[in-house]
Amino acid sequence: MSFGIDDLPVRDELRGKSPYGAPQLDVPVRLNTNENPYPLPEALVERITERVREAARSLNRYPDRDAVELRTELANYLTKTGGYRVGVENVWAANGSNEVIQQLLQAFGGPGRSAIGFEPSYSMHALIARGTGTGWISGPRNEDFSIDLPAAERWIAENKPDVVFITTPNNPTGNAVPPGTVLALYEAAQAARASQGSASMVIVDEAYIEFSHGDSLLPLLEGRPNLVVSRTMSKAFGAAGLRLGYLAAHPAVVDAVQLVRLPYHLSAVTQATALAALEHTDTLLGYVEQLKSERDRLVGELRALGCEVVESDANFVQFGRFENSHTAWQAILDRGVLVRDNGIPGWLRVSAGTPEENDAFLDAVRELKKEQS
Ligand code: PMP
Image 1 (cartoon, rainbow, N blue to C red):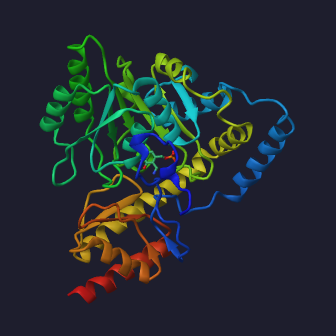
Image 2: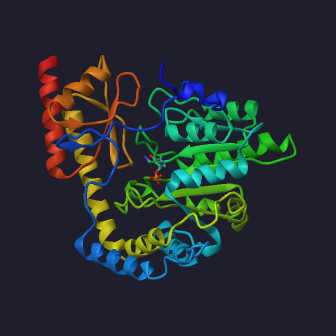
């Protein structure tokens, strides 16, 4: 018998678990991981090359540990687009928003503490909770995937979580959470912990906010030191391969995550590349506009094909319902299009691609529907 993971003294809560990851299959049309389908424009590739060449000359030294130039430019981007002024002291950056979330849970979660999310939602929240020894509470949603506010408030009051996750627009369902709901959950979380003589952190995951019909919740940071807005360059900036996520919050939150971050966690190459991408913000946000209109087209055409579709504020669309979503996933894959089966019975998720990719996807669904009728 070969030696395996179970023969190692791994932590009990990791036994029998699988690593997170969507299949990376080699098919013509890949619409399964909410990536931006547009490669970076050539002028930006040139600028990255220049910036990285410059950074390479000092790779014998550790990078700027506090990533001050990058955080300043991220703060400028948020101030310009988010309807709220933030400065370098409000912003923190890490290798993808997954790492931002991990650092937040290392600082505010941990053994003996708990976090709640309203599911189905981004499954890494629960997995990062597990990895950091934070208890996980799976809160409820309505049938239409909106947050059931009275039920959510009850769960928060009963469980008194140390951390509350609100993903807006939500992944995998695509719907946005109204600002009033976020405010109510923030109040509920603070009230619940106040009875313990402490407070709760509320993390608003805005990974897809640039695709939304509505506005960022950044202005809610005013006067709310326990609120954190988390962002990423993986989606709107078309830079999933870069691994750059960031947060905006009260400066005290930035001080707290610095207690758990590894020193020099953001390489000089990462910082140089992200700075180059931020110089091209306007061009990249132009692609976002194209993707938003393709997303709206997907919603309309899927409905015309007789699918149920969740209203989407993201760069992807949750559609159904299928008697067997895995069979439908396979039928679409057999036609060369990879979408995502998130294990929500009856539903699949498709990321908005280029117009040609979306046409290929819609053709596949059309054929599938014809077969089923
Ligand atoms: N939050 C949400 C809601 C996501 O869907 C994702 C990526 N799929 C992330 C965070 C993490 O993104 P990244 O680590 O690439 O910034």
